[in-house]
Length: 468
Image (spheres, one colour):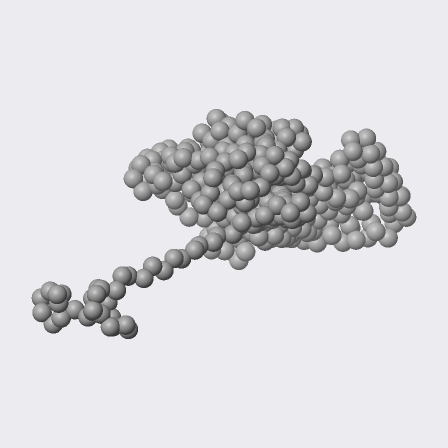
């Protein structure tokens, strides 16, 4: 009589008999493994595992102290001793070594569980840390971190219980035709895991390169290195995607058609977007504008806080931020107030009466400009009689500052108040607009009665002209 298990739908007899034959063996192995926990040798394994934990903690503590890496975003060390990827990786290495040594004298029970748990912990910690460093403060990173954790722990449970080969065999049976190739659920899962691993490695390498490039970089160096790090990340992610697609089994020649379509789309519909990206790399390469520069675009003035591939962020002294497409910074006139020199010239205008002592006024204005410690002593403030106004003499007080990013309105107000106090103390008059209106009465014609309206003030007649 035919075996009902072997005659199942969707496969040959020999193909379906293997899982059925392996099930009792798996249950027997689990029973033997459970009985091994009752043996005295378990205490030896526990002692070795505790020693491995202590040794791993000591190694990480020594390396952390020697390297002085206190950055909480560090992939290796993290924010604490056991937060980074280094601790579980060292513990896994020591645990595997202890497992190899213990297997020669005692039957293994604890290490059969400990090693898969440590492998899962290493995978989770590396995946989470790389994503946190590559994409800080991104909302979509948290669900991916949970997915990595669930997949790692599920794989560990299947591995420990011996169900992993059976699950893989069943997933391999679910397949369908895609063109000339056959895809199964197992192939897709393995391809997705391979793609994720390749992308994580690419992001890890790009994060390490970016941290090294941006270390101790300021001004133009920071902008240029930022452009290089962004380009390297894009190249590494692209190469990782190509490798991942090849691992899944997708024919890359089909992507040439997609590449042509993308090129046509950029040529017609994405001109502005492409122009912004090209302009961003031009700005970063030429260093005409750098992070920290004070610029003026049309009526908006502020400090550059970010230079990205597509746009630039300019922050005004009042706290408002303007997102400017990079194409505008290339095609329009932009005033860079700190291109060659971070010092910025500021001025204020003061009017005094015409009978004032101009030498005294010039001295008082120069002293009042130095009331703020933000005003540079060298070059010193300058005072000039700039105009003869309708109401008084106009003096222009000019001074230099080196920190316009801290705001200019409060500084100008402080200096104006000091000028006003100094002028009042020395009784220098600050004029205000005065107007004198003269009324001139018209000559009364002969024979006119007092109180009669002047001929020039008569009402016009109803005719086409004025009455004579």
